[in-house]
Every structure is written in C-alpha cells, then in structure tokens.
Amino acid sequence: MKIIVTFLLAIVVSPIWPLGPNPMPGDPFLVVNKSTNELAFIHENQIKRVFPVATGRSQDLTPEGIFTITVKAVNPYYRKKNIPGGDPENPLGTRWIGFDAEETDGRIYGIHGTNRPDSIGKYISQGCIRLHNEGVEFLFNHIPLGTKILITSSDQSFYELGKEYSALE
Image (cartoon, rainbow, N blue to C red; front, side, top):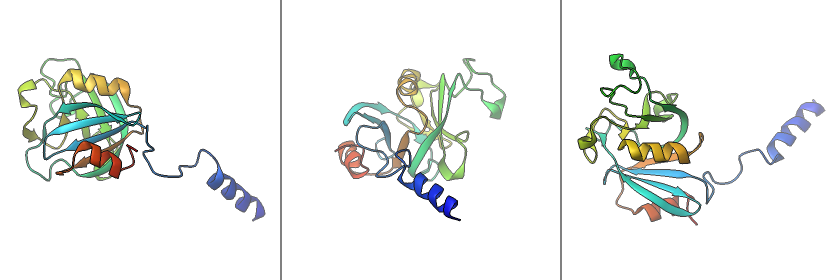
C-alpha cells in the first residue's frame, strides 16, 4: 500500500502532471467565433493570424466548447463519397485537423481545407470548420497535436476570449 501511495504522490507532484490553466499563455490556441465565421490563431501571447472560415449551416451543427486537436492528416481521404486525398473533387481540401468534439476521436469534427473556396465565410458545412487550403496548411504546420480549440458564438473580441481562456496574458 505504501508503494502505491508513493507512486501516486510522485505522479501528482511530477513536473509532467498537467497543473495550472490549459492553455498556458504562450501555448498555441485556436478560437473559432461562429458569430463572425472567423478563426484566430493565438501563439506566444499574440493573436498571430485571423482566418475567414465556413461553419455549420445551422447553429447546432458546429459544436461549441473547448476541444483538443487529436488528428492531423495531409490530403485526407473523404470516406463519405470514397474520394481519395489529393483528388480535386475531395471537399476536405489539402489538410485535416481533427478535434475531439462530442466524445469523438478527431475523425468526425475538424478544421479542413476545401475544394470550394467560395463557401468560406458562409454557414454551409455539416459541422466542420472550412478554411482556404492555404490557411489550413499554415495552421497544420504551426499547431501540434494537443492544441486546444475554443468554438463559440460570441460578441467578444478574440483578444477578450484569449484572455478569458488563459491563452493571452
């Protein structure tokens, strides 16, 4: 019993145990505001870029909350219509960045590119967040697995949201 208690104590006080707010100021953090159909990339205590996006055609299709990036894929395969990655008909574009919304594994909800750039800025998706391919490629290269993403419908600025969720000091 003493060994188990010692082990558990070592884990809890270990520097690898996730203590404190998550994200920490300086960590990469994404904010999607469905009210404006924009995504902010926050890193190193700054809002680095803001991208126009497309979100769910109805308010409830794109889930809201804080989620974790769990999957990243280059030229993702579109299973629904059996379209291989890299095919110009593939609606997922050149990158997939999946997150764990609604207890999924990052393969249902995600940030992805598009073969329809005219859809960006609209409420049109089945729940995913669409970016221009150049934007999703930038994010793909700048955020690691484990990055947090906040999806909200808010009248607050990205700066206010970043502060509220500890991504900005």
